Length: 373
Ligand code: GMT
Image (cartoon, rainbow, N blue to C red; front, side):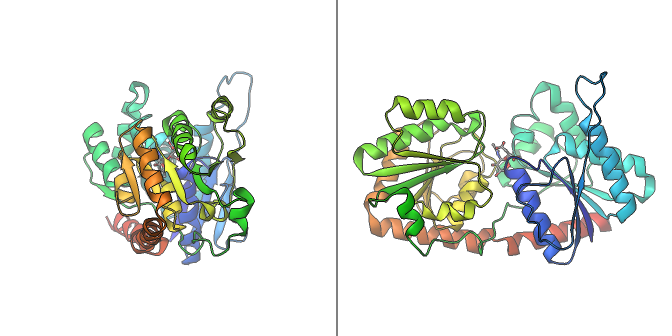
C-alpha cells in the first residue's frame, strides 16, 4: 500500500507512534509518505521506503496566524496525486483529520481513504473544548475509519461525540527489540555511583503530567532510601519543576536530562518509572519503560490500567496520592525479590501484548478493510 502519514512531528506520543508505525510499515514493504512541517524526531534517516514531504508555510503581512492547515491540505493533495496514495493516515484529530478531508475534496473521486487515529488529548482536552467540539465531531464523521489507542479513549469518544461509526481499538506498541532491559551496569553507575535506586520520569512536561507529584513522590522515597530521580523530556513545566527541586533541597539528587531521541538507552537504567498523570489515554512512555523491564508507579486513570497491570508490573494509585505512590515505590525498591518479579512481569507484558509485530498487522488489516468498503 502507499500510505501518507500526517502527525505532530516534534513533540508528544502521537508523533512517536505515527513515526514508529511508518517505519514498521515501510520495513514490511509499504511505501510511506510522511507529510508535515518537519521531519519527525524519531524518523531514522536510513529507513528505505519512507519519503518526507515538508509543508512550507508562506508568511504574508495580512496573516496574523499563518494558515499552516491549508498549506498542509494542499501538500497532502499534491503528494496523494503524485504518488497515487491509497490511504491518508492522520494522527491526532485536530486539525489533521480535517486537512485529510479537505485534501480528499480537492482530489475528488480518485482520492485516498482517510484513517484517523485518536490519541488522547485530541478528545479529552482539545476535542471537548467548546471551540473545537464541532470540528472534532466532524473530523470523526468524515473519516473513512477511526481508531483509538485504548479502550478508555474509544469509550470516551463514544460518550462525548456519539459517532455514527465504530471506533476500532488498536493499542499503541513498542519495539521490544530496541527497548530492552539493560545488561550492563555502566550507565546506571553514571547516574547512581553509590548504588542508589533510580526513579525516572519521561514526558513532554505539560501540566497534565503533574510533574510536582513526580518530585513529591521522589522526595518521600529519597527520605527513606538512597535514590536518584532522572527527568527526561522537555516542555513548559521544566523550569517550575527545577525550581521546586531546588526548594526541596534535592538538586544533587534530581538529574534533568532534557529531550532525548534515544530514550531506549536511558529507560533501562531505571528501577522504577513514575507517571502520576491527571489523564492519560494510554501512556506510551510507561509501555516503553515496561519493555525495558522497568515497573511503573502511577495513577489509576484513563487508559493506564490497560497498559500497567496493578500489582503485577506496577502500582496504580489515586490522583494526587503521592504518599501511596511513594509507599508502593518503597515497597518495591526495598524488596529485591519482588522488584525482580515485577521487572520480569513488566518485560513479559510488553513483549506478549504490545509488541510492534502484533500491532502493526492490525493497522494493515484495518487499512485493507477501509479500502474494501
Ligand atoms: O497530550 C499528550 O500528552 C500528547 C499526546 C500526543 O498526542 O502526543 O499524547 C497522547 O497520545 C499518546 C500516544 O498515543 C498517548 O500515549 C498519551 O497517553 C496521550 N496523552 C494523553 O492522553 C494525556
